[in-house]
Image (cartoon, rainbow over all chains, first blue to last red; front, side):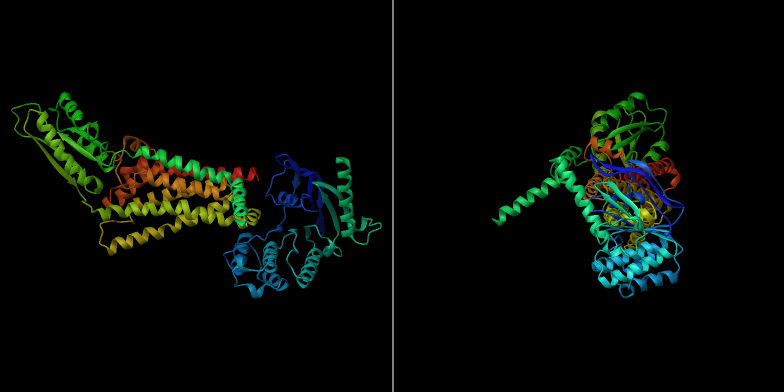
Length: 234
Length: 356
């Protein structure tokens, strides 16, 4: 069963953050939601997680485990890394020791276990947030800018791990404004701009035309839309 | 001009925090200024006093004369029986009981003895009650034809001021914790709130916090009990009535402070409002001074606060070991207020969710 988003709209006062967006997140897909700052990606994420209510439309999530990694790492800064993991493992329940070990190993977090989370560097903070998001081995994993502050080696390890994770039948929805890193793994691409969904397609169906990469394609598409908007305003 | 730039920065900061500044500079000073009207006198001029006839020979006219005579320094309440008056005294509904003898207007009566009874555990009223006895003796003697005596009696236990302050300080500590540490702790939670809400719910988070902190309040209760033991005070913080009243009070106040924090979205303004609530609750719960001290207005306000009744139950259990059945109605009331506070906390969480 996919996650289905139908005609979702979100208004903050007079500002429309998401405007009539419909899309689906299929099981086993590595799905990238791309868009510039303020395009509505994070609002979409928050609505998917039930943290923000849509003004209109509906979101249907099957009876499955959903995990989330946040743009701003979300954990208890005064607790140690180990304590944070213990707290959230206990909260979500049923976290196998082996899986916890795998996550710590894959994200190279073992040596920071006894450090106070608030003292972690940006990269380690991101890794801790990722571990917390993966603890319950979610069927659907939502990650908002998951590569921020990670070094290149950590990025490669994480991407390989996430790719293997989708091959086990789990879905990953990544929100980013920089798709270069994900390009070789992504199954489906959705592009948002100014609250609109301007592209929703499998990677194979996207015709890059004169562009070499998805990143160039996406940047040009956004620039064209902004140029058109400026021209209309003029 | 770095000073000018920095002052400009302060001005911009103020513009963005205008609500907080208005609250601190306008609302708070106004609140303090106006609360001063509740403090008019330093002696108990309106402390409730039960006036009861010694027997059926006391006439209505006698009672009216006595009632009028004591009005200058108390708020007299005519009651039907000494038993009822004593019950009121034990519940701090009144702070003294005056038993009126018969034939007080009869010049041939050479032995009209009024009995003026105070509670030995209400220490702040004990010293003034000596002076009030003298005032009454003088007033009745000059007003009534009979040969008047006013006999002052003190109900046991006769506590010291130090003993009296033990339950007061304990209650104050719980109030301080509920309105300062609990909001501070909840504000820290904001950093991880998205994950908590995604994995659980806001209601579960605040509910767990309430259970944890309420249990934690047993620690200061034990500390006070230990201190009282070391200092050899006649005070029992482990009396079931005291523990019940203290924990119910904490649940009410902590639920209220958390509801405020949730309504203010865990922001600084929520903590300001909680400090105001702390001042109001401490100032108007009649923790240390009997109602009737300071002003009539304060007496009216104090009796609107459930914490006032919680304080009486706590004090009575700790110092007098009174049977909890004497306060059944108040305990039921505290439970009802606690339920209302929990509903308010739930409602604040629902509001938070709906407005996210």
